[in-house]
Length: 110
Image 1 (cartoon, rainbow, N blue to C red):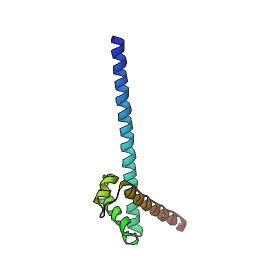
Image 2 (cartoon, rainbow, N blue to C red):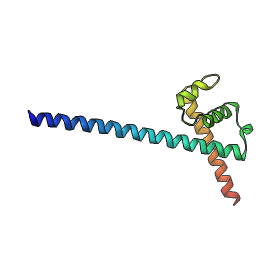
Image 3 (cartoon, rainbow, N blue to C red):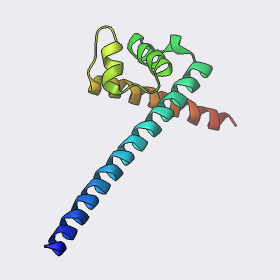
Image 4 (cartoon, helix red, strand yellow):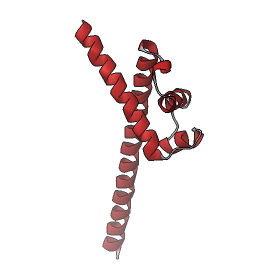
């Protein structure tokens, strides 16, 4: 019985550790993505400004800067009209593409 109790305890600990590690990895990914998004948006703001963006892109850019910790779902709920996670992700990806193009153009000029 003692061996069985030890085995069960070890399984529980391993299960909890796996879940904690998975959650920590997800949080790291989310934070890194948000930081990268804010950096991209700040680059766009400094170089070409939000005026050069469509209304939808400018709106999500301003919201991401104002709420850097917000989830995609939360950002989507703040938009008018509201947009789903997929729509928010698409807009943020588009902003990232614009920032990448600006970086490439800057390198070509040097």
